[in-house]
Length: 139
Image 1 (cartoon, one colour):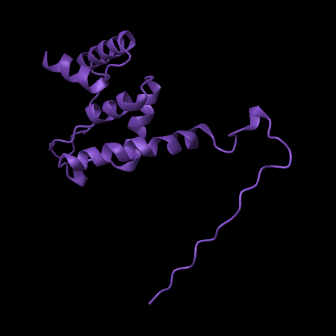
Image 2 (cartoon, helix red, strand yellow; image 1 turned 90 degrees about the vertical axis):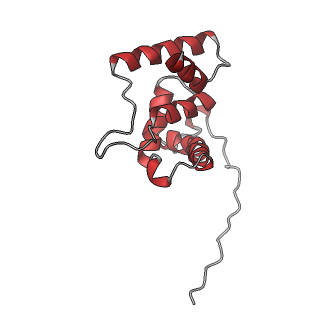
Image 3 (spheres, one colour; image 1 turned 180 degrees about the horizontal axis):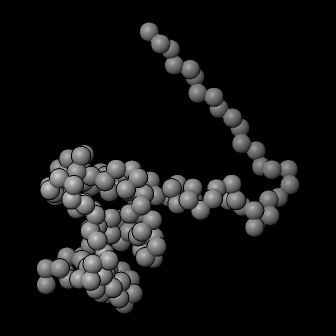
């Protein structure tokens, strides 16, 4: 039976010299910082899919999830609205073989919808992307 090694612990210590403000956090590039911040929202999204019975094969993979969260950040969406953006953009319903599962926001009708949602979020920052998406697509 294989044995597991004990985890190796280390004691973090304050640097001998203060780290200049402009160097703090410089060990990661922007992609690494984004990836680090993205996994908590990604896990919440995957958990929500699971809670709603969406099969694992019908959920976005890690690469797609990261791209969708980057797209949300590029639109200035944060927090719950960024998570909503992913869930509204990823089409988890059964699709024809080879059909994209990602909503194409570049299509004229979708682009208008996105602009309308962004305008509403700017006017009402406490609003949620998903609520506006459903309001504007159902109304």
